[in-house]
Amino acid sequence: MLNMSKSRTVLLWLLFPLVGLLLSSVLFPLAIADSHKPHAYTYAKLKANNGVVLHVLQTKPDNIALRAIDQNVTKTAQYGINGGFFYNGDLLSIAVTNDRPAKGEANDYGTGWYNTDVARGTLIWDQALRAFYIQVVKHAGELKVTDRNHYWAQGGVSMRLADAIGWEAQMIAEEMPAYDENRLRSAVAYDTSNHVWLIVTPTACTIEQFRSAILQKVAPGQLIDGVFLDGDGSSQLKSRQHQLQGDGREVYQMLEIVK
Image 1 (cartoon, one colour):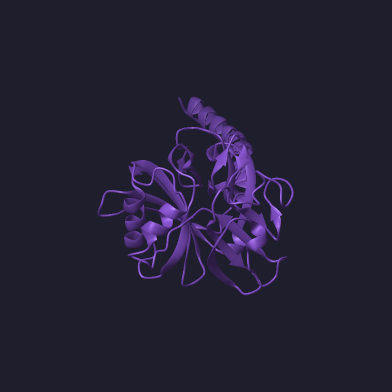
Image 2: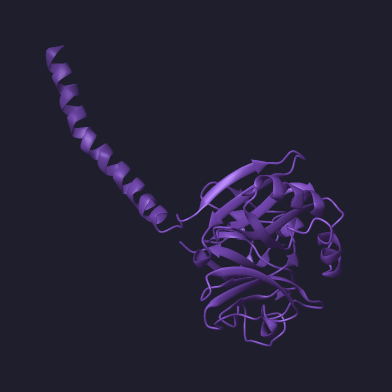
């Protein structure tokens, strides 16, 4: 019995390094891969009094890239949310960085240079001025920025968060699709500290319900303004903490969290 006990002890001492080596070979690559993913953001899940659930990513504007993609956001290697409107792979909303559209050349249709059909609210990060603002424009050439080599601009539909009376008429004028129907929704907004908020709800709701939920729960009293993005099945989010795939469809532009 004594010899058998000693044998087991010796066997365990021999096995421990092997188990450790095996675990290290599995876990170390995972840790390295995770270290290369974005960390400079915060995630929160918020529920408003009207029942709308919001998934939000907060980061800094210099940590945002407007990226052209051709798959569901959750299938990419990036973190972030869906961007503007599209049709058959063509971008129908402005998605421009330093006068370069996300997909192709300036002044070309479908590249992210135009808010197609009508002038729409466009969120601008003016890097030179260190300030956000929104302009209602039809194309990126109309944007008024401090330095055309230091900005990004994401088109959508104006939220007008400070305008309790006129926001709805402006939103309708900018031709927000299905605003009075229950749909999944997405938006991007900014606050008094120049944080950018990427917002997606998997709750089917109207634009008014979505806007009300944002005003109540996202940086209350500090959120300044933003734009509605493409919605319904296109409302998608990916982060370390959570993923929302909409209806699983491909989308063609996203707001990416870079680091």
